[in-house]
Amino acid sequence: MNVEKILANLEAKHPGEKEYLQAVREVLLSVQDEYNKHPEFEEAKIIERMVEPDRIYTFRVTWIDDNGEVQVNQGYRVQFNNAIGPYKGGIRFHASVNLSILKFLGFEQMFKNALTTLPMGGGKGGSDFSPRGKSDAEIMRFCQAFMLELWRNIGPDQDVPAGDIGVGGREVGYMYGMFKKLSHQCTGTMTGKGLEFGGSKIRPEATGFGALYFVEELLKDQNDTIKGKTIAVSGFGNVAWGAVTKATQLGGKVVTISGPDGYVYDPDGINTKEKIDYMLELRASGNDVVAPYAEKFPNATFYAGRKPWEQKVDIALPCATQNEVNLEDAKKLSANGVKYVAEVSNMGCTAEAIDHFLAQRMIYAPGKAVNAGGVATSGLEMTQNAQHIYWSEEEVDQRLHTIMRDIHEQCVLYGREEDGYMNYMKGANIAGFMKVARAMLGQGIV
Ligand code: 2IT
Image 1 (cartoon, protein in one colour):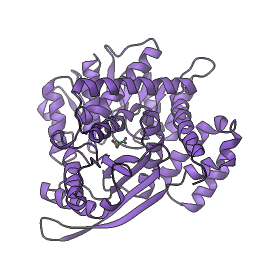
Image 2 (spheres, rainbow, N blue to C red):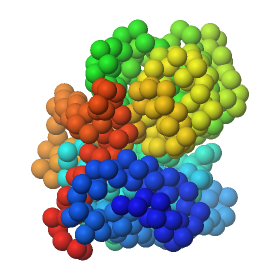
Image 3 (cartoon, rainbow, N blue to C red):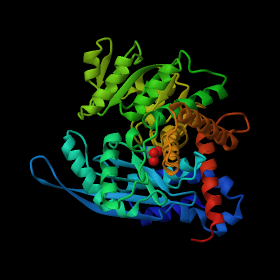
């Protein structure tokens, strides 16, 4: 495989899609040696086929705001690859959403879902609709208008959307309600649903919980433990909330959360029910700010316009969004003696930041392995829906735990270097890639 040639072709075909090209580059560089051991892959043009989504739906979403004004947004669903199972992946509502971002997320999702051990392909969708400051009625009208277009192209064995940034239980509920209204089907075509209508226990917590189960395995591999470690978390949404909750339960001390306005440092730890619940309140306010935390808990300090990566901690857990850790941040982390960086956001670190971590021999684990517990639990929700049953909290949590251990093992299989250093980026990329590649090969040229 000639990575540079493939990338140059892709860039010519999809100019300016920088996040997508970044995600593809990382995977191709990681897998090229392994790929070259398999002439059958090259013969079937596996790479050339894998980097292009199967199809993309783009549609206009029209809705009316509370002032009676007509609003127009762009909607998308990228059905990336279904070699392993139905397209599966979240829907993102954020002002920054564009095709490049959704293609990168769909591409990552394909490998992540392969790592979960469950039969799910990769997909992603979303809209440039910004939920910030919108009323509940506006959110509902937008979700309904979005589904009015999307519903024909999804289904339990076809494509199963879920949440992502800006899409939580409320939005999934509104979209699923409209899906049922239009399709007359109760087939659990979305995941992340409310517990009363097909949702799974632990799904809201799953991404954060799963991430910490993975971090536990990672630390064990280094003969280390999370007990007594200080942890910097970014973000303050659903994923950060789950991560803070589980990190605290396991004996770690989380000292930061962040938002678009800056970050808060709480030297006492974000470790009481009151503090952790307050994250949910901040999120529910719809204002997208964390500053009020430092007013409510005066021992904490708010740093406007800054990122938590300047704090001296043991573990960094980016839980916000793509490319939130750049080279400058990475240098601060290493200078502060941070040993472990586990991405909980998708592609949370830039390529330059990752290069820096690896050069420093820090332990870095990529989102597609660390945050796979979210979609894995979505897979468990699909299983429960298909069987028309509900599992207990213990049952789901135990399966999630097993899956995260399994993902860690797959990373070790392909990522352990000769001197013993654990390269999780390489391990996750090769393990995910090999499964998708073999699935594609087995199903012929389609
Ligand atoms: O990035 C992700 O894995 C998600 N947003 C969750 C996707 C899902 O289908 O549960």
